[in-house]
Length: 79
Image 1 (cartoon, rainbow, N blue to C red):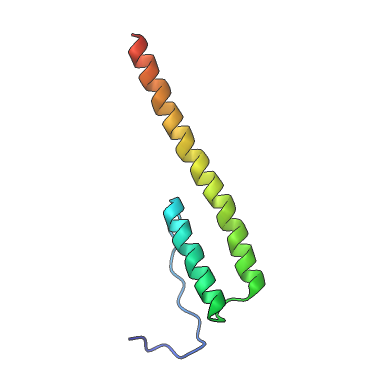
Image 2 (image 1 turned 135 degrees about the horizontal axis):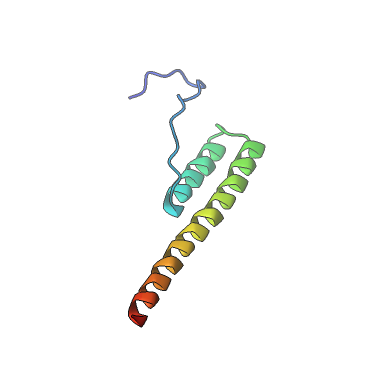
């Protein structure tokens, strides 16, 4: 049970948005907070925009790693 007064902002915690699943959870939380009146629409829009960019970066990075692994495997198979 929380001892925090209603309307008091939660203490900031460090976000670890290093996977698409983590970003998905973060966005779900943002939408829930918007519905509960804890976030305004503009703040939510900004968070969603940044999260979309982050997902594209994560996906690109994951794809790059997979491609490098395939290239290394193909190079090894040629030997």
